Structure formats: C-alpha cells, structure tokens
Amino acid sequence: MDVTAGRGTALVTGATSGIGAEFARQLAARGHDVVLVARDEQRLREGAERLAARYDVRTTPMTADLTDRAALDRVAARLTAADDPVRVLVNNAGFGIRNRFVGGDLDAEQAMIDVMITATMRLSHAAVGAMVERGAGVVLNVSSVAAWITGGTYSAAKAWETVFSESLSRELAGSGVRVTAVAPGYTRTEFHARAGMDMSRLPRWLWLDVEQVVAEALRDAARGAPVSVPGVPYKLVAGALHVLPRPLVRAVTGGPGRNGLRRKR
Image 1: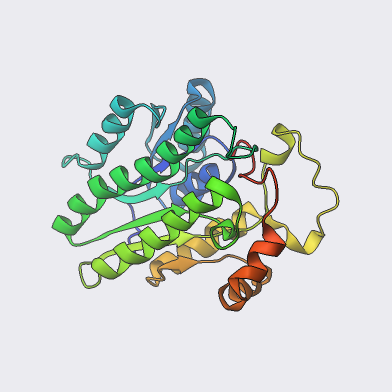
Image 2: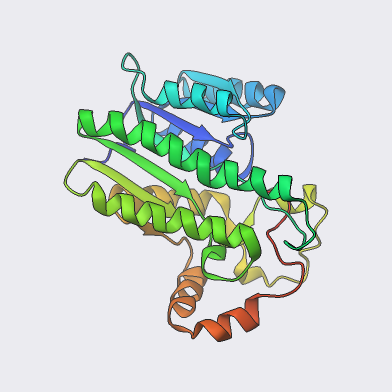
C-alpha cells in the first residue's frame, strides 16, 4: 500500500524552504494534512497558511529547534499521538558548516550532529514504533550524494543517515513500514544565494529541480526502495562512487577546509 498517495497526516522537518517545503507541498497536493516543523516561526506560519489555502488541507506549524532536546521531544510526542497518527515522516532538517575540523567550532559540529543524526534517530524511533503497530507508514530521511565523498563531518553525517535508513528498511521488511534515504545532488533552492555561494561555474546538467527531487523520492518510497538518488546524472555519479577505489575518491573529493556546505535548507 502506498501511504504517500492517500489522505493522512505527514510531518516534515525543515519545512520552510527548499526540499522540505517541496515535500510539504507535494504531500499536501496528494491530500495529506501536514505538520510543518522549523525554527523560523514567521516563515513557518506563512508556509502553513499558503498550503492550507491552496490545497484545502489542515496544516499545523510547529516551531522547534531540533538541537534542543525538549523541543525535539515535543516533535517526537506528536509522532506518537494516537488520535491523529502520522503516516509519513520526512526528516529533512539539516545544515553544514564550512571550516576545518581541527581548530574549528566544535559547538557548530555538535549542532550539526544533533540535527542530522540525533534528531533523525529519535524522530524515526518515535514514528516507526507507532507505524509498526498500525502496519503502515513511510519514513524519508533526506541524505545527500555527499554521503559517498569525503566532505568532512557533513559527509559523515549524511553517510550515517543513508546507512541508518538502509538498515531500518531491512529491519522493517514485511511490517508495512517503508524507510527511504533520499540522496540528491545539487538542487535549485534558495540555499546557495542565501549562503553567498557563487555556483555560476557549475554545469547546468548537474542541477536538479526541487520538484523532480521530491517526486522521484516519493515514487521510490512507494515502491520500497531503501535509497533514492534523483536524477540520471547523480545515479551515474553515485554508481561511480560505489565502485571507484576509496583512495581515488578521497583524492578527488577531499581537501583542506572541506566540511559541509554552510547552512543547508
């Protein structure tokens, strides 16, 4: 059963822009009520109002900083609520930092781990426990093709998200609950402009549209794929990264100061 296609409730973290906002939009377009989780209260409420007006669904803004355990626990509690069960969880919130690990900002490193690993783990644990009892549900964890390169703590966190999703997908086989890691490459969002990053030299063929990323991810989740790599170019890139010798991958993708992409989504 494809629970992403029918009516129900979906919860999306990092839902105010980019990939998270598009997940919220496409799920609302499919008839889902949506719980939107993010830190920016004003943008969160504006986004919720737009979705409600456009798709005639119920939207619930939930302001939460996922580095704060009390806020994280509030979101987890929503995932276990029996009176309005969450059928789809999208763990999309995340960010990167651009500095060397040695001598860098350890608190920033910790915050990144808190959002992309700790929050993903705890929210997934809350969601799948309730989903297994109902015999249906979908969890999508937004990872990245950076999971297969040597891009510092950011890549390491994305590698964790991918392997965690694959492992959980196998553990839940036959339960009716599906887990998919979504591993996009460069995607057209407001991220790069907001971060002040000049991406003008990147070839056009490497850019993905956010609509395509989310649509492919939802299709792959519906068929039970443990990993979704949207876009033909990145399917080829991911395939190559899987077979190339790791010393070569390290030589090509590593480098001083490489530790993520600043703020993400």
